Image 1 (cartoon, helix red, strand yellow):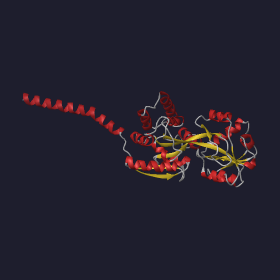
Image 2 (tube, rainbow, N blue to C red):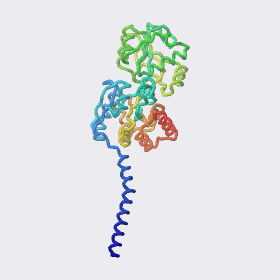
Image 3 (tube, rainbow, N blue to C red):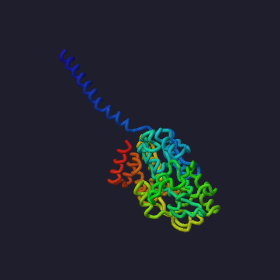
Length: 353
């Protein structure tokens, strides 16, 4: 009986020890499984109209994702705000391009996103700056902002920075919005078509830094004036809206534009859902940025002349939306992440909560 009792006690001891070890090890294994989110088998990339820079970017990255990550990727065309909403709802995995103003509103849940609240989007890529150009008919005799008084001005366009910039410029000159006849645009091209047809005296247009084909063609049909802002005007706008930038168009981009044109610019961005797996966001960032230098564009940007982002330019998004953790890890691995960037990231994360 003594031996049997000893054997029984030993069995109980080893059973208890096994249970204790399992209770310690199992949570660790479970935690490891939870941190590794599965990648999707398919991805949707929301872009702008066919032929646009963002469309070309979307198609190109879709091919790269299929080749390098073995995930089937497709593109879908949607408007500026809708691209953000698609990503926030999980109906698109990446959105190109989200403008400064729309991304800023979405993260804060204000203006057109007020009814929906803060959108669960994160910044993945700074793509390129887009200058805002103020164009007038030469026969309207508009050469500077005060000349817009009493003129038909097409600048009211949902989601466009013109809705911020133009009122700020009028305010700088002690003018009120009602001092001009503000006209609404349904599409980006509508305003320019209106001044060609003589239905408006001036319009705003966001365009590529090297020019927009339709504007180049239109300049041969109607004599146009491209308004250059003063440095004081630009400084006033940027103080109110620091997420915008400054840009100077080189002379000769358009017929009749024989001088540099100083204006403001907004960035276009790539966004993803905040819950995208970190290692997937890292892998996509690697495709887009791996051959970029701190101040030099990488190999990926060869696909379009406007795609000249650098590692340093990725700091641009920190005023607008939190960077996705996968991008943060990538930038840290590339040794460009700084204490100031970390501080900005934490500040914007508090806003996005």
